[in-house]
Length: 204
Image 1 (tube, rainbow, N blue to C red):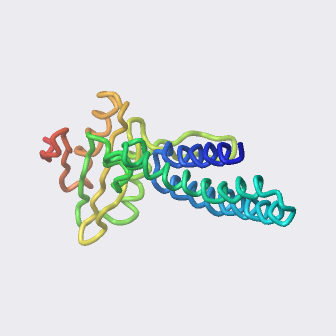
Image 2: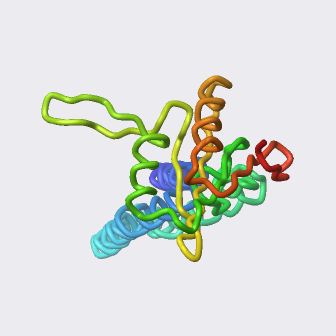
């Protein structure tokens, strides 16, 4: 019975790791299970086997000793088997690829400020166009403008370039509002829109 319980526990622990879709969390789960569950359980089983042997309980001692080996074998072997069968979710293609924030968004505006634009101009543009002001009891809260999920400054010198991805659920009206404010601003030197194919075209 002890052997069956250890085998089941090992497989369940392996499944807990394999079912995690994020590799980093799967690795943490593996470490926690191995260090704080597997090793202590093996030590307890080994001590139990030693005690049973000292009391001449050969049957129990043998079962507990075998369980010491069954538990890690079923955990490690079960995990390797699940990986071989393609059941390890954290190994799914593309799931854990490193990519910039917003890179999964197909539509975006990339624009460059005029060289004459000052940091004060850029800061004001940031607040007036890329963000919206929401009155609060104790002041004003700045959030991304409607349709904008985030933005970044991949280049600050010699000219400032801004990458603005649209939210996946942004409406065409929201996109048009942001486009118009960008291309009509005298602070903007040039602007491009990233279309679905990844090609870039200059906005008219």
